[in-house]
Length: 145
Length: 296
Image (cartoon, rainbow over all chains, first blue to last red; front, side, top):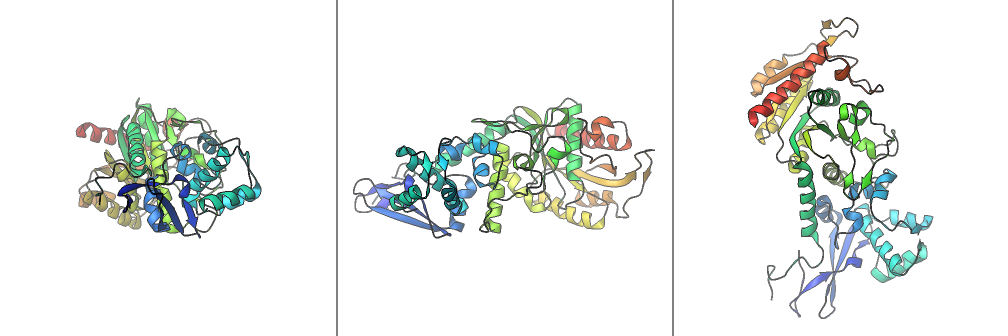
């Protein structure tokens, strides 16, 4: 699926930080025209999203987490072996507060990996080492998650 | 206005490349495995896992390199049968996950090895949002990762221990289109034969090669004197294979020793090759080898 900005006749670009769960059932994915800056959001329900999830791909582009061995298993399997989780290259140095962990768990599981990646990237870009509720509020404000 | 073809790439979502990359990874694993064989029944409780483990041991004993994929995600038992401890540490690096090493050097990958403790069921999420559709989706993805992300290396045989249900072959076929064949397992009971007949029909209709039918628990073998007795009163399984037009490749007796967990580093077949049951297992393994030889 590709998106075209009609006025500019330019291909719109997927916004990596634009994936956000809407309520608990929907997914919004943002696209932006790099020429005029116009943005749109593609909304899907979880059954539409299933197609992509089943392929094991990540919306917004592949991440190190997503391409790690058994990446989907390690991120989706509740209480999976820690070794698998460690196998996935991630920001190991980041500390998640209990509240932040609870909030990320509330994200629908089919986009949780992407949401986590967004939060991690946000923290790393700012040099933050602890992910807490305040930081997640900032992410929500910035990217709508 | 530009058309779809005028737009290069996919706008940064990278989905096409990701799908291609997954396919390449899967192919690179499978290309190193000569023969892929499913052992299935349609029905649970017929002893698929025990038969699979012992056939694997027999093939390994004959000098073949063998791996087992435990495709029964919700009732995994292969690791347990072959002596891979559930708390065994997994070795993971960027190239994949090292499989478990069971008796006779059989390589194993099973959901059991990915769970934190022996009592833990497979749960994709701890929240109630995992509907049946999502569970099914995750199971497909899990199977793909278990095949593609395991460092199987060069293998002669990959045996796939299937879960109950004739529908489950669909997932495996999409993962392993070059499947060498399936072995159908039943017990003498009319109910089991009724269900396995559906599985055979499905495989025939879908063009999946059926290597043959095994009658498991065909008789009862006394572990002390090796004498056989009748266990189930049922219809002749041979008649089912004739009716379905597939080879009948062996009768394996019920033997209490066959499904015991291996604590000693051995497995039933390895320790009892010359028993009635051991010879029956070898007969099935030979039938598989004959099928492979004829096909290649």
